[in-house]
Image (cartoon, rainbow, N blue to C red):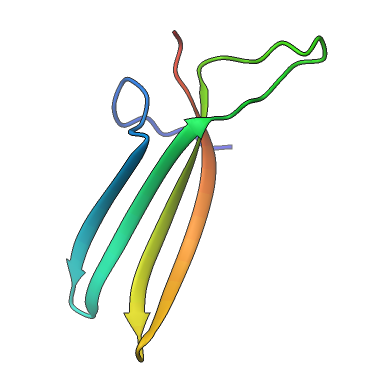
Amino acid sequence: MAELQATPGFPDAKKETKIATGYGDVVLIQRSVPAGLKVEQNIELTGINLVSLRAEWRSNGAVQSKKIEFYVYRNG
């Protein structure tokens, strides 16, 4: 398991960034929502967000994409 921390605080709820590459533009779409994880006593764990990153680009006229999801924990 790897840990990566870039900034303090929770990630933005939604963010889109256009990245110019030598092969065309890539759009990076970030979404973050509370994970909604619960323990055995049906108590929700707070401070954990599910983040999805999706990259979209055009190749031969068709939209291509890749997506990853991960959890981010921020205390309080």
